[in-house]
Length: 174
Image (tube, rainbow, N blue to C red; front, side):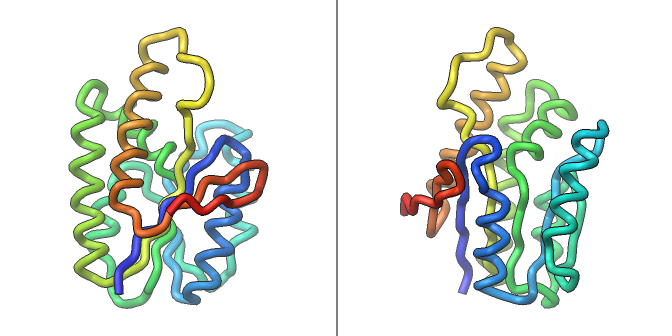
């Protein structure tokens, strides 16, 4: 049976930790699909902490752009995919494809979700909620915030379950 679980919340709200705990409760055959890129020392440290927290027997794929390809090519070695995180993936797409990011992101997600449903896998998607603060003061940041908001709405509409993390506390939305 396929299932899509969406986890969102602010930065440092505990999204990844909650997603990892939820994944471990659902299956031992987890594929961790990481989208972060270690472009500076601080991000290298974050990635290292995430790696250390994960069980050693989980499979990890680090893919900053071709998330849909990884999901479409899943084999039988995993029952559950934890995608962490949609926000970094969108940022990567925004830099790679400039103005066509929104169309590319939604097309890629639709293909990925269709593949997950057909393969009867569980997908946990982690994403930041970026629209609860001030409107950014520059065009690139506004474009990113708009894209993130639209993609989050799309994922929420497809999700079977959704959680919002507040100060480490998960609140079930649906």
